[in-house]
Length: 267
Image (cartoon, rainbow, N blue to C red):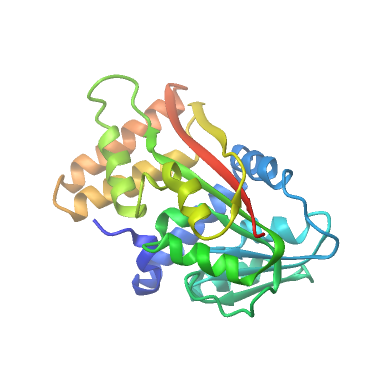
């Protein structure tokens, strides 16, 4: 099953609108914001830093960057016009924020034009991650920082025991929305091969216990994909979604995925 984000420009506008809503839901999640602030706090932003986010989606992280201490300009780049329209609408009141349409593997920017490049939950969707990393290297100034944050999707689970029926939705979501679920485990070697000096990775755990939140969207999207591929029917898909809400409403929900951040410097 192809990663939908990897073919974002080809998707139906209605699907893109629904994905845009999911991106904003994730951006507003307090635990997601804690992880974002945690690794951004480790970056040594130079005075009046110019920062690029590759794969900005609806701009949730780019808006944070524009308001980060020391940042004079934040630029978000994404291939989806629908996402960028939403990003510009939500960021219209932020004067040092702008958005460009483009592919992270062929950046429309000059060499050595940014101090920091952020790739937040994007690289796992890219069919050529080394190509994107090489482009980040090109547009960074000497001593500039590349920061990558992504999910270790092989760890994702909502199971509370063996043969949990909801786990099939997680597997389907991962197959349909992630290009490479193992990417995080190869990141240090990949980024170092592009010429960067790589710092040790950091782990960030994301847990939903009791009430469900962002991971409930995985159930919905995974169930829909199972229907699309003919694995189950509409009735069973609806039953899986209802069961997920029942667990959440009764404080019986559990979900977990590990994330990791990596900082690297251009010599």
